[in-house]
Amino acid sequence: MNVAVTDCADGVVLVAVRGALDIDSAPQLREAMHGALDRGRSRIVVDLGDVDFCDSVGLGTFAYSHNRCVADGGYLRLVAPSPSLARLLDTVGLTGRIPVHATVSDALTGAPPAPRPRDPFEDAPPS
Image (tube, rainbow, N blue to C red; front, side, top):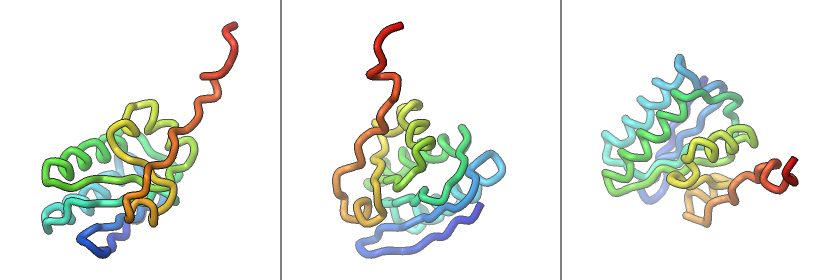
């Protein structure tokens, strides 16, 4: 996994993640976000466009970081998860707490979050 941190306008930090986010790599993401928080940057946008796998440790990193950002008066916003990651975020209830945006630009400007992923079984007739 690769993590790139960029300080943006208005004190927002963009964290771009590439590769698998799992038990071995999640500490690197956690350190990047905690580093931003330790510098007084509590508004964090995480670009997930190049994440090809995320396990429960990665999900826990988002939940913990979200809580810490909010406690410090900021926010955590997620951007461009793959369809499978978007479904996973929704299934575990993170999309109800953490805004998920379609583009980095939308997340940086605070545009409304992307619609929840459609569950193909929601509209299925009962069997």
